[in-house]
Image (cartoon, rainbow, N blue to C red; front, side, top):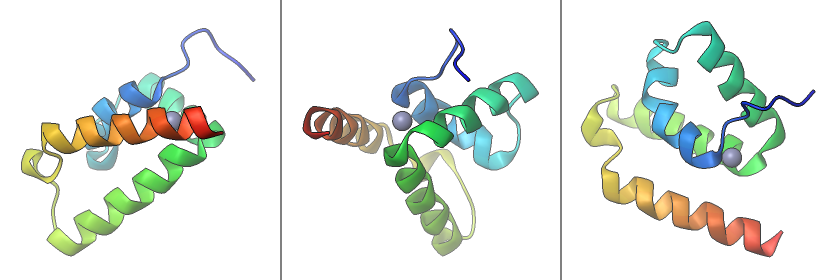
Length: 83
Ligand SMILES: [Zn+2]
């Protein structure tokens, strides 16, 4: 199943706070899940994210500093080059 509105890895990262808080709209949630189904990199990253949140006990904006988002995006780009 493909849709023209498929999320990119960058969009997924931008939406992860809402996803984990359960505040995504049903449409966004479906797109998020669809991307996870096709992107092993994001699945791994989300798993790490959940582990971090479990450790911290909560999710705050500070949990995902902008610098770390940039690092992750760089990481994704590198993965795509390799695979
Ligand atoms: Zn992805």
